[in-house]
Image 1 (tube, rainbow, N blue to C red):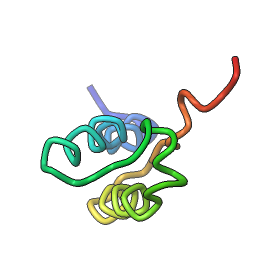
Image 2: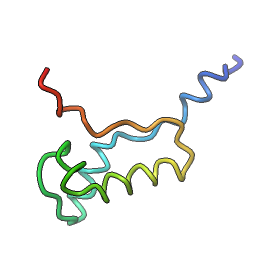
Image 3: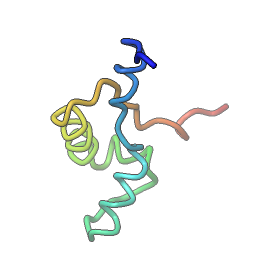
Image 4: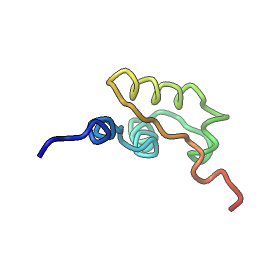
Length: 71
């Protein structure tokens, strides 16, 4: 079966940013606040995670705002 270009593009989606944040916590990196608050308290961590995703060829990265909305 021939893979479409859309399928090829979607095959390069990185792991969840939440997963990477949990890995950082497990490795002893001090993080303050919930994961969404890290965009304010530790923007360096969020930037680093996104840069790593892009450096390995990710086509899509997600925001770090899942629980930051009222609704």
